[in-house]
Image (cartoon, rainbow, N blue to C red; front, side):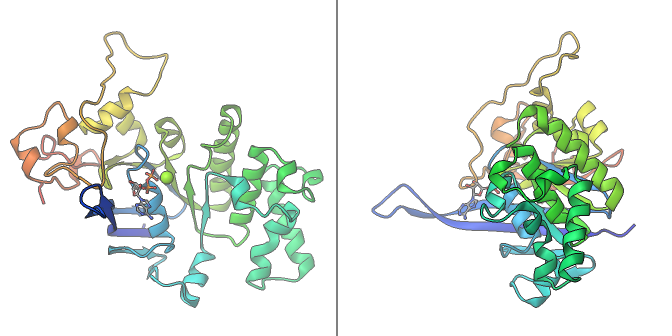
Length: 327
Ligand SMILES: Nc1ncnc2c1ncn2[C@@H]1O[C@H](COP(=O)(O)OP(=O)(O)O)[C@@H](O)[C@H]1O
Ligand SMILES: [Mg+2]
């Protein structure tokens, strides 16, 4: 099956100044530093990694909200334009975004049903009565009861607001939803409900997700494939069950070992990462993870590993796993 979304060697650098001299020294912050992946129609790619590793920047690049320093995004067979022209607006009907903060995404002055139907009004789809009916249908589909439809965002709970955001994101029948930490701001008790809703919506509407989260457990639950990011690059990619049962990359091993689980086997040891936290202004030479890696060799300090096949449908960027792969 051909990909719905293809991301090819995406790079986003920011010029910054680091302390030193009168105005600081110019430096480059490598927010995203060569990321490639694909999302198939109706499937979910989970993008996971610690805060600051470049997940949200990747989402903005995918949506064309931010021009890439290098690389390209293809969606439904066409390039995502770097400028917000008519082509970009047409494409954005097909690719929608769900953020962490539903209250920030909604207009406090409008009843929620008006906000759900708004995209139809903007794109002049249907009559006002048809728009309202479609909005009500979709709000019911995301589990909102009719007595909530005319309420204002602040009258709803966090979970209900995120349902409104999802209904609005789906009303133009997009083929891709980019979800950036969509449940991180919700109460733990509500998180599971919204995850189930996302899975149900995918089944019903056949929509693909680029699902971004720092929470490995959540990513594991929703994804068909998982990509682990470290300092602006993907270091491991594969099916969630395999990746979580037998993480291959030393960084993934450390992340997985930190997931709290009552079923840990005896003799299990949590891997505590050594060294400095990652800094995208001073990306280490060679493998960016090498200063924190217990297995690093001289090659790891010098040669940057590329994301390469390690068998079993998995990929990793690690010299120890694919000794010949380097860039
Ligand atoms: N507009 C910007 N200017 C400078 N640095 C930025 C900007 N946006 C993001 N960054 C930096 O890029 C890195 C990646 O950020 P982000 O993509 O938000 O990470 P994540 O979503 O994984 O937490 C961080 O170090 C962040 O501080
Ligand atoms: Mg983020």
